[in-house]
Length: 260
Picture 1: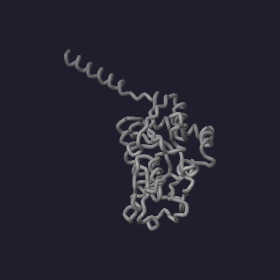
Picture 2: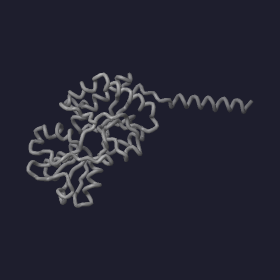
Picture 3: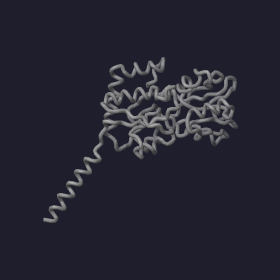
Picture 4: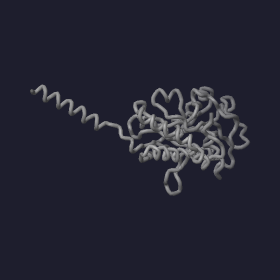
């Protein structure tokens, strides 16, 4: 009898535990680094805005879920995701082989190139030869940091990481940096087309290296959350199919950022 009672108790605990840990996606928390306009930034009212923010809110709407945005430094996104501080990284995170060893990704959201920004007339190019002895600013944890360190650091280029993109531009403007490496669209819209970027320009060609720079950005997800990935992928497909993606895109860009 005692064995039977014990067995029933164990089964009850198992069912209880299963219920307690059942995944409920009525609320989806997205991690974001709000220093990367036009993809994600803060308005004068302190509210988050940007292409990624609009896409995330639309995805949540399609899934009948409440969207909660959790601000986090970009270099800590993957550890925070794994620690369940949030459920997904929606912050212009490129899908690279290195990251895919640690986390899963949703379907592609967009694909934009990487480029170097420097003062007009500097004659700098995005090559190790041209940048030798120079200091290049990058945001910590980004594909641009990985690229610069792998391709340039060993050849006499000082690669200086910063906690966020705003700090990169601040030091570029102050003269502590010779150039900055970041997403090309972010540089053009978030810096070069603003008053503070008036004396700067994109120099040289776009950089292309799928191994370090990836082939597009997606939502970073925990590998075990396959149900959430399925839901989000379905929502992205619907947004693309019914024209909602293009409507959101046109608010920020006059060209197609989805890419090939």
